[in-house]
Length: 420
Image 1: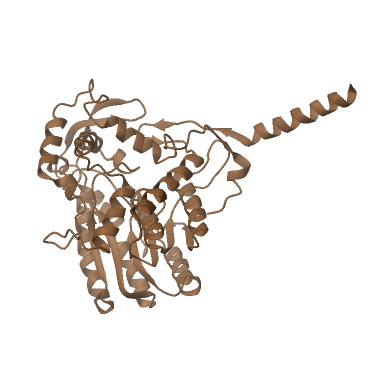
Image 2: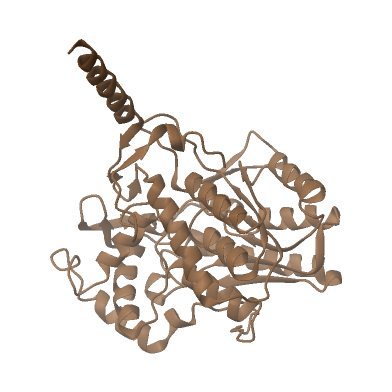
Protein backbone atom coordinates (compact mmCIF):
# COMPACT_ATOMS: atom_id res chain seq x y z
CA UNK A 1 0.00 0.00 0.00
CA UNK A 2 2.83 2.36 0.88
CA UNK A 3 4.52 1.61 -2.44
CA UNK A 4 1.28 2.32 -4.29
CA UNK A 5 0.91 5.67 -2.51
CA UNK A 6 4.48 6.61 -3.46
CA UNK A 7 3.75 5.80 -7.09
CA UNK A 8 0.57 7.85 -7.03
CA UNK A 9 2.45 10.81 -5.55
CA UNK A 10 5.09 10.48 -8.27
CA UNK A 11 2.42 10.45 -10.98
CA UNK A 12 0.69 13.48 -9.43
CA UNK A 13 4.01 15.31 -9.34
CA UNK A 14 4.70 14.51 -13.00
CA UNK A 15 1.22 15.65 -14.00
CA UNK A 16 1.69 18.87 -12.01
CA UNK A 17 5.04 19.54 -13.71
CA UNK A 18 3.49 18.93 -17.13
CA UNK A 19 0.61 21.26 -16.27
CA UNK A 20 3.09 23.93 -15.23
CA UNK A 21 4.63 23.83 -18.70
CA UNK A 22 1.33 24.43 -20.44
CA UNK A 23 0.35 28.10 -20.74
CA UNK A 24 -3.26 29.05 -21.34
CA UNK A 25 -3.72 31.50 -24.19
CA UNK A 26 -6.70 33.56 -25.28
CA UNK A 27 -7.52 36.48 -27.53
CA UNK A 28 -6.80 39.84 -25.91
CA UNK A 29 -7.45 43.15 -27.65
CA UNK A 30 -7.00 46.74 -26.58
CA UNK A 31 -8.96 48.72 -29.10
CA UNK A 32 -7.49 47.62 -32.43
CA UNK A 33 -4.20 46.37 -31.00
CA UNK A 34 -3.58 42.71 -30.12
CA UNK A 35 -2.21 42.08 -26.63
CA UNK A 36 -1.74 38.32 -26.96
CA UNK A 37 -0.40 35.79 -29.42
CA UNK A 38 -0.90 32.11 -30.18
CA UNK A 39 2.50 30.72 -31.28
CA UNK A 40 1.03 27.45 -32.55
CA UNK A 41 -1.58 29.38 -34.50
CA UNK A 42 1.21 31.45 -36.07
CA UNK A 43 2.91 28.22 -37.07
CA UNK A 44 -0.24 26.93 -38.71
CA UNK A 45 -0.77 30.22 -40.52
CA UNK A 46 2.76 30.00 -41.95
CA UNK A 47 2.05 26.41 -43.01
CA UNK A 48 -1.22 27.50 -44.64
CA UNK A 49 0.57 30.20 -46.63
CA UNK A 50 3.26 27.76 -47.73
CA UNK A 51 0.60 25.27 -48.78
CA UNK A 52 -1.18 27.93 -50.84
CA UNK A 53 2.01 28.80 -52.74
CA UNK A 54 2.93 25.17 -53.35
CA UNK A 55 -0.49 24.53 -54.87
CA UNK A 56 0.15 27.31 -57.40
CA UNK A 57 3.25 25.50 -58.63
CA UNK A 58 6.84 26.59 -59.29
CA UNK A 59 7.87 29.78 -61.08
CA UNK A 60 11.27 31.18 -62.04
CA UNK A 61 11.74 34.01 -59.58
CA UNK A 62 14.41 35.14 -57.15
CA UNK A 63 17.15 32.84 -55.93
CA UNK A 64 18.66 35.05 -53.21
CA UNK A 65 16.17 37.45 -51.64
CA UNK A 66 16.43 40.03 -48.88
CA UNK A 67 13.11 41.03 -47.29
CA UNK A 68 13.18 44.16 -45.13
CA UNK A 69 10.15 43.81 -42.88
CA UNK A 70 9.56 40.15 -43.71
CA UNK A 71 8.04 38.91 -40.46
CA UNK A 72 4.36 39.53 -41.13
CA UNK A 73 1.69 40.52 -43.65
CA UNK A 74 2.99 41.57 -47.09
CA UNK A 75 6.62 41.06 -46.11
CA UNK A 76 6.06 37.52 -44.84
CA UNK A 77 3.93 36.72 -47.88
CA UNK A 78 6.73 37.97 -50.14
CA UNK A 79 9.20 35.72 -48.37
CA UNK A 80 6.94 32.68 -48.54
CA UNK A 81 6.31 33.02 -52.27
CA UNK A 82 10.01 33.50 -53.03
CA UNK A 83 11.02 30.45 -50.99
CA UNK A 84 8.26 28.00 -51.80
CA UNK A 85 7.27 29.30 -55.23
CA UNK A 86 10.72 30.00 -56.63
CA UNK A 87 13.05 28.04 -54.36
CA UNK A 88 14.85 31.13 -53.09
CA UNK A 89 17.15 31.40 -50.12
CA UNK A 90 15.96 34.33 -48.02
CA UNK A 91 17.09 36.84 -45.43
CA UNK A 92 14.57 38.65 -43.26
CA UNK A 93 15.19 41.81 -41.26
CA UNK A 94 12.48 42.61 -38.72
CA UNK A 95 12.18 44.13 -35.26
CA UNK A 96 10.16 41.70 -33.16
CA UNK A 97 9.75 41.15 -29.43
CA UNK A 98 10.79 37.74 -28.05
CA UNK A 99 9.18 35.84 -25.18
CA UNK A 100 9.44 37.64 -21.84
CA UNK A 101 7.47 35.34 -19.56
CA UNK A 102 4.30 33.21 -19.46
CA UNK A 103 2.14 36.33 -19.74
CA UNK A 104 4.09 37.92 -22.61
CA UNK A 105 4.78 35.37 -25.31
CA UNK A 106 6.41 37.78 -27.76
CA UNK A 107 5.01 39.10 -31.02
CA UNK A 108 3.46 37.18 -33.88
CA UNK A 109 6.34 38.16 -36.14
CA UNK A 110 8.79 36.51 -33.74
CA UNK A 111 7.00 33.18 -34.21
CA UNK A 112 6.45 33.67 -37.93
CA UNK A 113 10.21 33.97 -38.39
CA UNK A 114 10.93 30.89 -36.32
CA UNK A 115 8.40 28.65 -38.01
CA UNK A 116 9.18 29.93 -41.50
CA UNK A 117 12.84 29.11 -40.92
CA UNK A 118 11.96 25.60 -39.75
CA UNK A 119 9.95 24.88 -42.89
CA UNK A 120 12.44 26.51 -45.26
CA UNK A 121 15.32 24.49 -43.82
CA UNK A 122 13.27 21.30 -44.13
CA UNK A 123 13.02 22.17 -47.83
CA UNK A 124 16.80 22.60 -48.04
CA UNK A 125 16.67 26.40 -48.22
CA UNK A 126 18.64 29.03 -46.33
CA UNK A 127 16.44 31.20 -44.10
CA UNK A 128 18.36 33.75 -42.06
CA UNK A 129 16.58 36.02 -39.58
CA UNK A 130 18.01 39.30 -38.29
CA UNK A 131 16.00 40.67 -35.39
CA UNK A 132 16.72 44.37 -35.09
CA UNK A 133 16.02 47.87 -36.33
CA UNK A 134 16.39 47.94 -40.12
CA UNK A 135 16.95 51.69 -40.00
CA UNK A 136 20.26 51.38 -38.16
CA UNK A 137 23.72 51.25 -39.69
CA UNK A 138 24.59 48.34 -37.41
CA UNK A 139 21.91 46.02 -38.79
CA UNK A 140 22.73 47.06 -42.36
CA UNK A 141 26.36 46.14 -41.80
CA UNK A 142 25.48 42.80 -40.21
CA UNK A 143 23.30 41.89 -43.19
CA UNK A 144 25.98 42.98 -45.67
CA UNK A 145 28.62 40.90 -43.90
CA UNK A 146 26.32 37.88 -43.91
CA UNK A 147 25.59 38.21 -47.64
CA UNK A 148 29.31 38.38 -48.36
CA UNK A 149 30.43 35.62 -46.05
CA UNK A 150 27.57 33.10 -45.87
CA UNK A 151 24.91 33.86 -48.48
CA UNK A 152 26.78 33.36 -51.71
CA UNK A 153 27.98 36.91 -52.09
CA UNK A 154 25.04 38.44 -53.99
CA UNK A 155 21.27 38.94 -53.88
CA UNK A 156 18.92 39.32 -56.84
CA UNK A 157 15.85 40.70 -55.02
CA UNK A 158 15.25 43.21 -52.25
CA UNK A 159 11.70 43.75 -50.98
CA UNK A 160 11.13 46.78 -48.76
CA UNK A 161 7.98 46.28 -46.65
CA UNK A 162 8.35 48.44 -43.56
CA UNK A 163 5.59 50.06 -41.50
CA UNK A 164 7.22 51.64 -38.47
CA UNK A 165 6.18 54.11 -35.77
CA UNK A 166 9.54 55.88 -35.61
CA UNK A 167 13.03 56.20 -37.05
CA UNK A 168 16.16 57.66 -35.56
CA UNK A 169 17.97 60.09 -37.84
CA UNK A 170 21.02 58.05 -38.99
CA UNK A 171 23.12 61.22 -39.03
CA UNK A 172 21.88 62.60 -35.69
CA UNK A 173 20.95 59.99 -33.04
CA UNK A 174 19.40 62.69 -30.87
CA UNK A 175 16.67 63.28 -33.48
CA UNK A 176 13.77 60.83 -33.65
CA UNK A 177 11.16 61.02 -36.40
CA UNK A 178 7.69 59.67 -35.53
CA UNK A 179 5.17 58.73 -38.21
CA UNK A 180 1.59 59.95 -38.03
CA UNK A 181 -1.57 58.74 -39.74
CA UNK A 182 -3.39 62.03 -40.27
CA UNK A 183 -4.99 64.11 -43.01
CA UNK A 184 -3.15 67.14 -44.35
CA UNK A 185 -4.71 70.59 -44.54
CA UNK A 186 -8.07 69.55 -43.08
CA UNK A 187 -9.67 67.55 -40.29
CA UNK A 188 -11.65 64.45 -41.22
CA UNK A 189 -14.68 62.95 -39.47
CA UNK A 190 -16.11 59.52 -40.13
CA UNK A 191 -16.90 56.10 -38.72
CA UNK A 192 -14.24 53.71 -37.47
CA UNK A 193 -14.45 50.24 -35.91
CA UNK A 194 -13.35 49.08 -32.47
CA UNK A 195 -12.38 45.42 -32.76
CA UNK A 196 -12.17 44.92 -29.01
CA UNK A 197 -15.75 46.02 -28.39
CA UNK A 198 -17.14 45.17 -31.85
CA UNK A 199 -18.44 48.70 -32.13
CA UNK A 200 -18.69 51.34 -34.81
CA UNK A 201 -17.95 54.83 -33.58
CA UNK A 202 -17.53 58.31 -35.00
CA UNK A 203 -14.00 59.67 -35.08
CA UNK A 204 -12.49 63.02 -35.95
CA UNK A 205 -8.84 63.19 -36.95
CA UNK A 206 -7.18 66.60 -36.89
CA UNK A 207 -4.84 67.79 -39.61
CA UNK A 208 -1.16 67.02 -39.29
CA UNK A 209 1.34 69.78 -38.74
CA UNK A 210 4.14 70.31 -41.25
CA UNK A 211 6.58 68.80 -38.73
CA UNK A 212 4.41 65.69 -38.39
CA UNK A 213 4.12 65.34 -42.16
CA UNK A 214 7.86 65.73 -42.66
CA UNK A 215 8.58 63.18 -39.93
CA UNK A 216 6.22 60.67 -41.53
CA UNK A 217 8.02 61.08 -44.84
CA UNK A 218 11.35 60.36 -43.12
CA UNK A 219 9.96 57.18 -41.56
CA UNK A 220 7.61 55.82 -44.21
CA UNK A 221 9.09 57.27 -47.40
CA UNK A 222 11.94 55.85 -49.42
CA UNK A 223 14.97 57.33 -47.67
CA UNK A 224 15.94 54.13 -45.90
CA UNK A 225 15.18 52.06 -49.00
CA UNK A 226 17.71 54.20 -50.87
CA UNK A 227 20.29 53.70 -48.12
CA UNK A 228 19.93 49.92 -48.24
CA UNK A 229 20.32 49.71 -52.01
CA UNK A 230 23.21 52.19 -52.11
CA UNK A 231 25.12 50.32 -49.42
CA UNK A 232 24.62 46.95 -51.09
CA UNK A 233 25.48 48.34 -54.54
CA UNK A 234 28.70 49.93 -53.29
CA UNK A 235 29.68 46.65 -51.68
CA UNK A 236 29.16 44.79 -54.95
CA UNK A 237 26.57 42.34 -53.64
CA UNK A 238 23.78 43.12 -56.12
CA UNK A 239 23.49 40.57 -58.89
CA UNK A 240 23.05 41.33 -62.59
CA UNK A 241 19.32 41.87 -63.20
CA UNK A 242 18.75 42.79 -59.55
CA UNK A 243 15.18 43.82 -58.70
CA UNK A 244 13.86 45.83 -55.77
CA UNK A 245 10.28 46.65 -54.79
CA UNK A 246 8.66 48.94 -52.23
CA UNK A 247 5.00 48.48 -51.42
CA UNK A 248 2.67 51.45 -51.66
CA UNK A 249 -1.07 52.07 -51.56
CA UNK A 250 -3.44 54.45 -53.31
CA UNK A 251 -6.92 53.14 -52.62
CA UNK A 252 -10.30 54.62 -53.33
CA UNK A 253 -11.10 58.34 -53.64
CA UNK A 254 -13.30 57.91 -50.56
CA UNK A 255 -10.13 57.24 -48.54
CA UNK A 256 -7.97 59.98 -50.06
CA UNK A 257 -8.53 62.55 -47.30
CA UNK A 258 -6.96 60.39 -44.63
CA UNK A 259 -4.58 58.26 -46.72
CA UNK A 260 -3.54 59.11 -50.28
CA UNK A 261 -3.67 62.87 -49.63
CA UNK A 262 -2.68 62.54 -45.96
CA UNK A 263 0.66 62.03 -44.24
CA UNK A 264 0.99 58.45 -45.46
CA UNK A 265 0.26 59.54 -49.01
CA UNK A 266 2.98 62.17 -48.79
CA UNK A 267 5.40 59.47 -47.66
CA UNK A 268 4.41 57.23 -50.58
CA UNK A 269 4.94 60.12 -53.01
CA UNK A 270 8.44 60.49 -51.59
CA UNK A 271 9.00 56.77 -52.03
CA UNK A 272 8.23 57.12 -55.74
CA UNK A 273 10.96 59.75 -56.01
CA UNK A 274 13.29 57.32 -54.27
CA UNK A 275 12.44 54.63 -56.80
CA UNK A 276 13.65 56.89 -59.62
CA UNK A 277 16.95 57.54 -57.82
CA UNK A 278 17.43 53.84 -57.14
CA UNK A 279 16.66 53.03 -60.76
CA UNK A 280 19.46 55.30 -61.95
CA UNK A 281 21.79 53.66 -59.44
CA UNK A 282 21.14 50.14 -60.72
CA UNK A 283 20.80 50.82 -64.45
CA UNK A 284 24.29 49.46 -65.02
CA UNK A 285 23.16 46.14 -63.53
CA UNK A 286 20.16 45.99 -65.87
CA UNK A 287 18.27 46.26 -62.61
CA UNK A 288 14.75 47.36 -61.88
CA UNK A 289 13.32 49.46 -59.04
CA UNK A 290 9.56 49.27 -58.71
CA UNK A 291 6.81 50.78 -56.64
CA UNK A 292 4.08 48.18 -56.36
CA UNK A 293 0.63 49.52 -55.47
CA UNK A 294 -1.06 46.95 -53.26
CA UNK A 295 -4.72 46.31 -52.55
CA UNK A 296 -6.30 47.01 -49.18
CA UNK A 297 -5.71 44.12 -46.79
CA UNK A 298 -5.97 43.51 -43.08
CA UNK A 299 -2.67 44.27 -41.37
CA UNK A 300 -1.62 45.47 -37.94
CA UNK A 301 -1.09 48.88 -39.52
CA UNK A 302 -4.30 49.11 -41.55
CA UNK A 303 -6.59 48.46 -38.59
CA UNK A 304 -5.29 51.55 -36.78
CA UNK A 305 -5.51 53.89 -39.78
CA UNK A 306 -8.38 56.23 -38.94
CA UNK A 307 -11.66 55.38 -40.73
CA UNK A 308 -9.90 52.98 -43.12
CA UNK A 309 -11.43 49.77 -41.62
CA UNK A 310 -14.93 50.91 -42.61
CA UNK A 311 -13.82 51.11 -46.22
CA UNK A 312 -12.29 47.64 -45.86
CA UNK A 313 -15.42 45.98 -44.53
CA UNK A 314 -17.41 47.37 -47.46
CA UNK A 315 -14.72 46.50 -50.02
CA UNK A 316 -14.27 42.97 -48.71
CA UNK A 317 -17.96 42.24 -49.04
CA UNK A 318 -18.04 43.37 -52.66
CA UNK A 319 -14.80 41.64 -53.62
CA UNK A 320 -15.89 38.42 -51.93
CA UNK A 321 -19.09 38.48 -53.96
CA UNK A 322 -17.02 38.97 -57.12
CA UNK A 323 -14.50 36.30 -56.14
CA UNK A 324 -11.60 38.79 -56.19
CA UNK A 325 -10.90 39.21 -52.46
CA UNK A 326 -7.29 38.39 -51.60
CA UNK A 327 -5.28 37.82 -48.45
CA UNK A 328 -1.64 39.02 -48.41
CA UNK A 329 -0.25 35.65 -49.56
CA UNK A 330 -2.69 35.47 -52.47
CA UNK A 331 -1.92 39.05 -53.47
CA UNK A 332 1.87 38.83 -53.28
CA UNK A 333 2.11 35.43 -54.88
CA UNK A 334 0.14 36.82 -57.83
CA UNK A 335 2.37 39.90 -57.94
CA UNK A 336 5.62 37.96 -58.20
CA UNK A 337 4.34 34.97 -60.14
CA UNK A 338 2.41 36.91 -62.80
CA UNK A 339 3.97 40.38 -62.91
CA UNK A 340 7.52 40.61 -61.56
CA UNK A 341 8.65 37.26 -62.95
CA UNK A 342 5.74 36.39 -65.22
CA UNK A 343 4.24 37.58 -68.48
CA UNK A 344 1.18 39.40 -67.09
CA UNK A 345 2.57 42.75 -65.89
CA UNK A 346 0.10 45.51 -65.06
CA UNK A 347 2.02 48.79 -65.17
CA UNK A 348 0.54 52.29 -65.11
CA UNK A 349 1.71 55.43 -66.93
CA UNK A 350 4.06 56.25 -64.03
CA UNK A 351 5.80 52.89 -64.24
CA UNK A 352 4.21 51.47 -61.10
CA UNK A 353 3.12 47.86 -60.83
CA UNK A 354 -0.64 47.76 -60.24
CA UNK A 355 -1.76 44.48 -58.67
CA UNK A 356 -4.44 46.63 -56.99
CA UNK A 357 -6.39 46.69 -60.27
CA UNK A 358 -9.00 44.32 -58.85
CA UNK A 359 -9.71 46.76 -56.01
CA UNK A 360 -9.72 49.72 -58.39
CA UNK A 361 -12.16 48.06 -60.80
CA UNK A 362 -14.85 50.64 -61.61
CA UNK A 363 -17.81 48.44 -60.72
CA UNK A 364 -16.12 47.28 -57.51
CA UNK A 365 -15.51 50.86 -56.42
CA UNK A 366 -19.04 51.96 -57.32
CA UNK A 367 -20.61 49.18 -55.27
CA UNK A 368 -18.17 49.68 -52.36
CA UNK A 369 -18.96 53.39 -52.08
CA UNK A 370 -22.69 52.65 -52.22
CA UNK A 371 -22.33 50.06 -49.46
CA UNK A 372 -20.32 52.41 -47.26
CA UNK A 373 -23.28 54.82 -47.30
CA UNK A 374 -25.49 52.07 -45.87
CA UNK A 375 -23.23 51.14 -42.96
CA UNK A 376 -24.42 52.20 -39.50
CA UNK A 377 -23.48 51.32 -35.90
CA UNK A 378 -26.48 48.98 -35.88
CA UNK A 379 -25.74 46.96 -39.03
CA UNK A 380 -21.96 47.03 -39.57
CA UNK A 381 -21.49 43.66 -37.84
CA UNK A 382 -23.89 41.74 -40.04
CA UNK A 383 -24.05 39.92 -43.36
CA UNK A 384 -24.40 43.31 -45.03
CA UNK A 385 -20.63 43.89 -44.71
CA UNK A 386 -17.34 41.98 -44.66
CA UNK A 387 -16.70 42.80 -41.00
CA UNK A 388 -16.54 39.14 -39.96
CA UNK A 389 -13.84 38.51 -42.56
CA UNK A 390 -11.95 41.65 -41.58
CA UNK A 391 -11.95 40.73 -37.90
CA UNK A 392 -11.02 37.09 -38.51
CA UNK A 393 -8.10 38.10 -40.74
CA UNK A 394 -6.86 40.44 -38.02
CA UNK A 395 -7.02 37.71 -35.39
CA UNK A 396 -5.17 35.35 -37.73
CA UNK A 397 -2.28 37.83 -37.82
CA UNK A 398 -1.75 36.92 -34.16
CA UNK A 399 -2.34 33.19 -34.49
CA UNK A 400 -6.00 33.08 -33.48
CA UNK A 401 -8.93 31.72 -35.51
CA UNK A 402 -6.45 30.07 -37.88
CA UNK A 403 -7.81 27.25 -40.01
CA UNK A 404 -6.24 24.04 -38.74
CA UNK A 405 -5.25 25.39 -35.30
CA UNK A 406 -7.68 25.08 -32.43
CA UNK A 407 -5.34 24.90 -29.44
CA UNK A 408 -5.82 27.06 -26.36
CA UNK A 409 -2.56 26.15 -24.60
CA UNK A 410 1.12 26.13 -25.54
CA UNK A 411 4.07 24.27 -24.06
CA UNK A 412 6.11 27.09 -22.53
CA UNK A 413 9.30 25.09 -22.13
CA UNK A 414 9.11 23.91 -25.73
CA UNK A 415 8.56 27.31 -27.34
CA UNK A 416 11.20 29.09 -25.27
CA UNK A 417 13.84 26.74 -26.63
CA UNK A 418 13.14 27.84 -30.20
CA UNK A 419 15.57 30.30 -31.80
CA UNK A 420 14.84 32.67 -34.68
